[in-house]
Image (cartoon, rainbow, N blue to C red; front, side, top):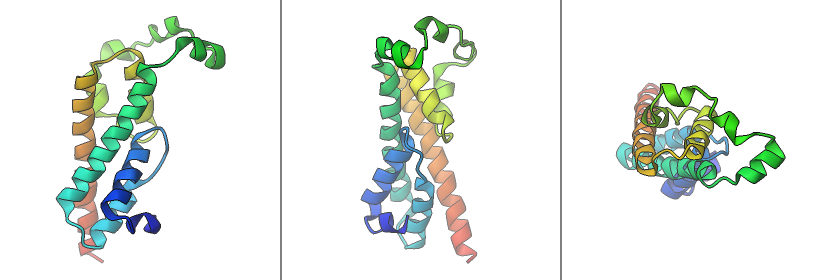
Length: 149
């Protein structure tokens, strides 16, 4: 992770992008390293959030533009089975998009929101809010930790 820190904001952006997509990656650690190196908190949080948000959109659009013929052929999932999932009826897509920052499950949530054709704008806004809060809290916790070492 230290090698990514050499690239500063760009390294954080691409690490957050990967972490926001379907690739498991720990951009939070890089955020902490850059805070430790003296980078200002607000720009770091914004860069990480935007990168993670755009990465999340890649997962969302994977579901949104999915080809059901390929899903049925290779994954053996019938599109009618998707309608049997009751979570999409219990929770509005905005609430689900707020929690898409959760590792592993977040990508699944976003792909599912894409498959059910959730609003691109609403999903994006709530996804951005959830990821902004996540990185802001992480940055605050990291600065507290850094101040104590």
